[in-house]
Length: 200
Image (tube, rainbow, N blue to C red):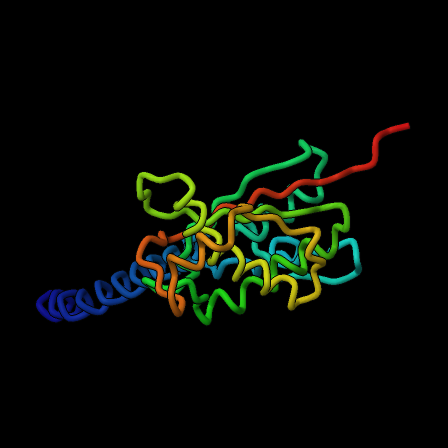
């Protein structure tokens, strides 16, 4: 009797260890099977969400949600003859009417968009801090607007497709020496118009 009791007591820890092992294994397998979609890598972006095919057979990298994509989507639609877009980014060196290096690289993209739609024109407006004199404010805004217009022309857009404030050049010359422009604010406004042929 004593020997049998000892045998049972000696074997008991072994059985417990086996039970613990199998329980741990089941928990591990359950954990592997319970992985959610958050553990999986995100799917690759759809090409149509990144690249836009233009009517002139060119393509442009314009991810969904960007200003470039908003402009392209509107140009490709039939919703209205004109639309205003606010460009909030800083395009000019602070205190000067000189384009930043980033803006010099971005303005040609606008030119490419307009080039793809030959019936589209753009009006450029650069806000300035008010001086209390509307004519002077127009004169102050002309120089940076002209800087963008000339950059578009340099990239192949015809001048008659670009407009900006028409002011007396003699007034503008009095205000911005060597590109200094303390009144210039960040951002510009673009008004793009489609001159679609009338339905006959």
